[in-house]
Image (cartoon, rainbow, N blue to C red; front, side):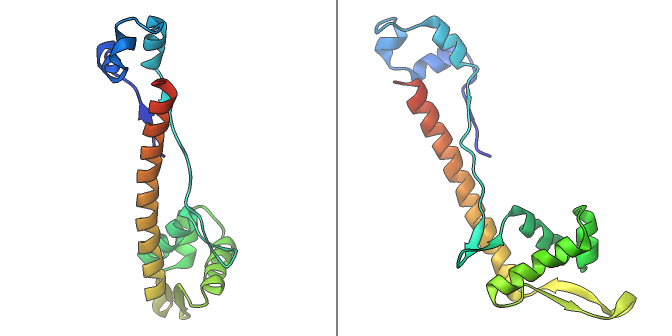
Length: 154
């Protein structure tokens, strides 16, 4: 989550305040300056993708897909995330159905031949989500700073 904090000396914060206010004009209040050093403004948000109005992908599902790729198993990925196998399978099945193409392929085979792995579509989905999430976090940081500035510099 993006977070903008005013910290540092009062002098550094006073530099961000218009000069006529910093000199004591326009009713500048030292108490306000003191309190401003302790303000934390944070604009929050999450990226959740839908396709044709149906839930597709969010942070939890990305984590599940990543763990499936690393472990090679839906069961092991579910255990690592402390969720049931059924919940993990239902999430994968929902993503496959919404996408119209598999994001995970599973092979039956027991202890030696089975396993699951991401398809090319699944890998692209994770990569695009990561890119979108990074841009979203940058926007949240920018929005937090802008909000902080407008809130405390008027």
